[in-house]
Image 1 (cartoon, rainbow, N blue to C red):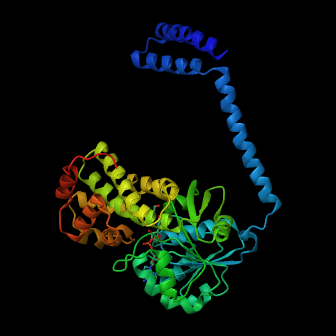
Image 2 (cartoon, rainbow, N blue to C red):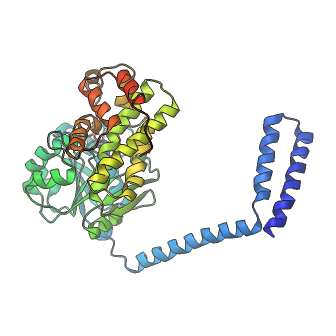
Image 3 (cartoon, rainbow, N blue to C red):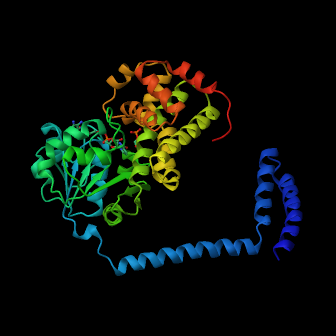
Length: 413
Ligand SMILES: NC(=O)c1ccc[n+]([C@@H]2O[C@H](COP(=O)([O-])OP(=O)(O)OC[C@H]3O[C@@H](n4cnc5c(N)ncnc54)[C@H](O)[C@@H]3O)[C@@H](O)[C@H]2O)c1
Ligand SMILES: O=P(O)(O)OC[C@H](O)CO
C-alpha cells in the first residue's frame, strides 16, 4: 500500500509543481516550496501516518493512566503545605515564590529580605520593585526581614541567596530553621576557596545535616513570572523528597523532573555559568555562529570530563539541568553570565561590568573554583580555564580565543 502511494507520489509531485508554475507564475522560490510540500505529503504512506497517530495515542494513554493513578493517591504535598519561606528576595527567589503562591492561593509564602525598605515596598506594592518591577505578585506573598518570623513553622524553606554569601548567611539563620524542615536550594555555583557545591555549603553553614533538594534547569526568572512553560530538575539523595518538591512546584507551566543525581545537577548548573561567559565573549568578539557552536560544544565536553569524574551521571548532563540550561544560558541574551562575557568581548573591563550590574552573575566567582577543582581531579579544561584567566586579568579575551582556536588539532574525545 505504502509502496503504491509512494510510486504515485512522484507523479503527483511533478504535476503539482507544473500546476503551480502555470498558475501563479510568482517565481522560482514559491514553486520550489510548493513542490517540496507536495513531495513531503505524498511521500508519507497511509501506513506511516497510521503508525505516527498510533504512537501519539499510546503516549496520551500513558499520560492518562499516570494522571489517574496520581488522582487516586492524591496526597499531594501542596494540599497539606501551609507556609513556605524563601531566603533571598532577588529575581529568582521572587519568581519561585510567585509560582508557589499561584499554585495555592491560601499558601503563606514569606520572603526573607535584607532591607526593611524593600520588604515594606513589596508588602505595600505587591511587586518586587528592585528585581522584577514589571510583575504583580500574588497577594499571598509577603516579605519580612525577621528571620524567626519567616522561617519558623515553614513546611519548606527555599534558599535563593547567591553562593558566595550562602555559608555566612546560613550560619546567621540556622537557629530559626527546624532541623527537619527540607531546604530547597536554587543557587548555582561553587564557593571560591573551598570549591564546594551548595549541597556541601548548606550543611557546613547550618552546622548539621538538613533534608536537602537542589533545583536547577533552564529557568529565567522573567519567563516564570510570565507563566511561560518551563522545566526544572529537583534532585535529592532522598527520592521521596524530590517527589514532594515535584508535587509542590509542579503545574501546567512548570514541569519538575525528579533525580537522585545531586552532584550532576549541581555541577552542571555551576559550570554552565562559566561556559555562558565564554559564549558571551565569542559573541562580543563577533566570531560568528560556527565558532559559537564549537566553543559551546567544547564546553559541554569539559563539563562532562570534570562532572563525570566527580560522579555525575551522563543522562543528567545530557538532560534539562545539563544541556538544557547550557543552551539557555549560552545562547539567550537574558543571561547575566552571557552578558558579562559579551561585554568583556566588546572590550569593557570586568570592574566596569560588575560595577554596573545589580544582580549576581555566579559564573564570575565560580570560574576560578572550577579550575581548582579540575586541577585537583587532574582534568584539563581549556575553555573554562581561559575564562578564569580573562576574569583574573591574566589574558585579554581576544588573545585567549586565538589561543583556544590554535590549540593542537586532536581527535574527538
Ligand atoms: N535569576 C534567574 O533567572 C535564576 C535562575 C535560576 C537560578 N538562579 C540562581 O539563583 C540564585 C539567586 O539568583 P537571583 O537571580 O535571585 O539573584 P539576584 O541578584 O537577583 O538576587 C540576589 C538576592 O540575594 C540577596 N543577597 C545577596 N547577598 C546576600 C547576603 N549576604 N545575605 C542575604 N541575602 C543576600 C540579595 O539581597 C537579593 O535579594 C543564583 O545562584 C542564581 O544563579 C537565578
Ligand atoms: O542569568 P544567569 O546567567 O544567571 O542564568 C540564570 C539561570 O541560571 C538560567 O537557568
